[in-house]
Length: 493
Image 1 (cartoon, rainbow, N blue to C red):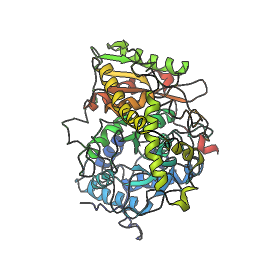
Image 2: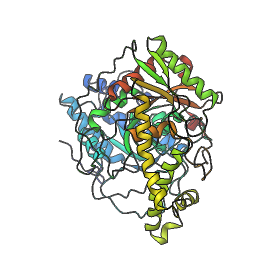
Image 3: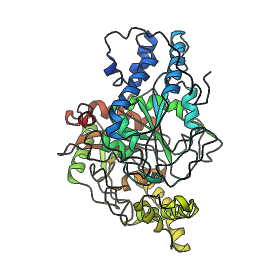
Image 4: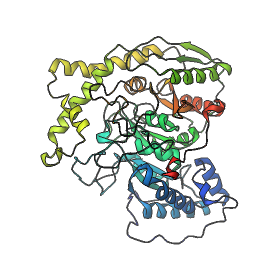
């Protein structure tokens, strides 16, 4: 069995391992292979995990000077993990569907012996004493963990802006933000750093950057993937170029952990079954959720076209009326500000001035909130959950925008660039964080400026398989205008 110490072999040179002839697959194309293509090639002896990991690390070397998507690399450990995986595949004893499939982690996932800075120079760099649950699960499954990807300040920005790192950028256009808070994971996924890239999501932080970077991003049912530290509404989810890659990772990621009181037992879900016949499905369509910024006409049209794909395949599209009360997302924002004001006060005074000014001002918004308003802000989370569950109870799936708008300038902390209106773009996403329903984004088209636009596909709680199957169906049936070659804007930087 592999060790659960990510740093095993940190100081030792990787041992040489014979690499099977990869046939006609050039190294430059190895990073374009899906998780299923990799494991099929491993099983046939046509490819070795060491060569794949080497190609991934070389791609990071080549691209990350422009993208700034990676914070913490584990080259030697990942190569050692790949070598061990290769030995298992040659012996016919792989650990499962993620053995030898490269992955990345988000910066907020703890690694033994390394600090967890949450994208901020103001945090005190205390080494973690234990791995996050998903880290141990990936290692135990034989997935070579390449790196941790960057996040913005304290994870509370929908961008790649940070006091700790250079600003992360969108690989479709380096002038654009990749979104956030899983900024580096989305940018890296679009370029091909790894087939599976883990992000976290409390109000859209997997789905928003996945949409703006043109990749698939999945927020599973709340509690399916254990989170440490736990927080109501916070999910961990995979991101990648293909829905099938996300599904392939799910059996490894799910399961309870004593550190997460919200974590669920393993459910009876066949993650390998992505078949779907839309005939007879009732699919809700939401273009106005009732709160937040208005939807850009181009975004709305792309989502309508996605609904047409399902309708043409036999589904019944059911327009849903707005169901969030105006201002309710601002109340959730108030709740987050209160908590972060407490964190701000607890920071080392000698480091507090290092905090990004936008976030420092945002935190101060929670300073003078009355007890009455604090309770109202906490209750707003349940209000949104109940409204979302009630509005979607009679449909199998719901289609909506991920964000009201397309990609925005990389230097802006938020799409609004306004600390007094920071969360007006999250209403379509945060509804499912509060309700706990699974929600996926798949690229559905491009604006006139070339920004990717994802469609959000949500399902009932615990029906994660249906959400992923619908995403896989759409991925193959979507209009040709929704598919372009993967971005290489970084190559000309």
